[in-house]
Amino acid sequence: MTLADEIGDKDLLYLDDLQVGQRFTSKTHRVDEAQIKAFARQFDPQPFHLDENAAKDSLFSGLVASVEGLPLAGGVIGAGVELSWPRPTRPGDVLRVESEVQEIIPSRSRPDRGVALMRIVTHNQRDEVVQIFVAKLVVPRRT
Image (cartoon, rainbow, N blue to C red; front, side, top):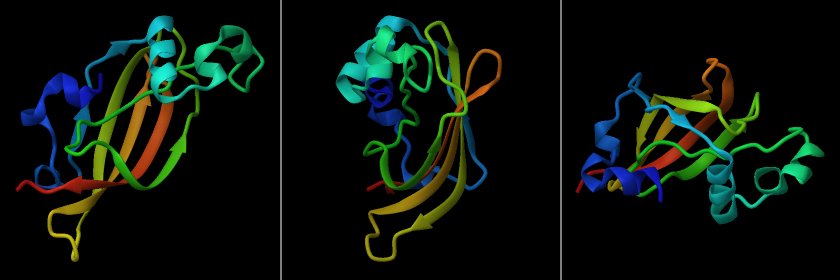
């Protein structure tokens, strides 16, 4: 289940809802081992998300989580991304995602959509940054 499924269509964000400088902060979420593995099996099946022993021998030296973000209408469709993980997310971590709209570019050729440049930063319970995601996201306009 995605965040968009949980909140429903009426709460989805369209290009028209976004403004430069607008910030969004998620609720916190405690990550456990079962959630890490279930998400990875479906969306990101890599050994360091699925197997503790394989993860110990990886760059991360242990099991780490894959994370998701904003409830955008149409889903998160990337037109270009820059992504980094300064620290791994471990079982037991409590995550919070902060997103900021950096630029909005309405499409000239497709008036039903545009691009939002977003900076999305995930923090753990110690306020350490565990993921930085800067993305040009294709976002539909309200019809």
